[in-house]
Length: 231
Image 1 (tube, helix red, strand yellow):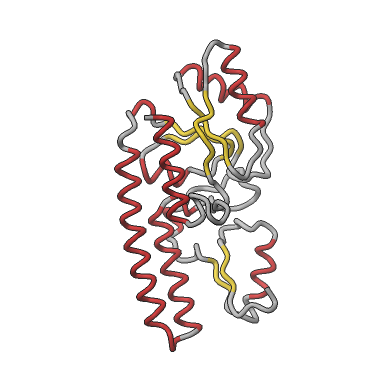
Image 2 (cartoon, one colour):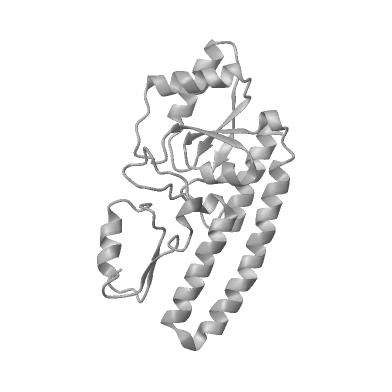
């Protein structure tokens, strides 16, 4: 980072204690939190998120990622005004793709019967997704992957799955599957079969060459996985 000309990071305490490092670097070089221009009135509370005021998982609402794209484009143009038009043109083309993606996600999620629109994951990373696209989201852990879960959390989620006849839960690429396996086992003991509906990308993209190695492909992978399990 000392050698970088510019630095972009998520912001909203996504990077935890590294945020202090970025704030110090900002004194000597352009250091940009890509979430900085999102109106705080549309941000989710970060309660139980390791001390952060807001939920940092903004990329699960594509409209928030459009804002982040505009922030990046503007920052690049300010740093390198000679190529400002290039940054703006590229951003405009990408934003059009994001607008189409946003509408696509909205239409696909609407295909799931309303009673079955429940997304159960290991931690509460998909709140923006649920708010934007009309699907109830439940996480075993809090917003932060550093949050601890206990037997009470497992039993409460198990009972919800049983009582509401939820047929699938999802694991995440960045979190061990052990926690969700405990929930599934508990539901089975109560006579309700729950399947793992697939693996979702929550805090990272896929490996290069995978079907989730760009933002747009990651969103489509997640949506496809969700609808195949819940539709």
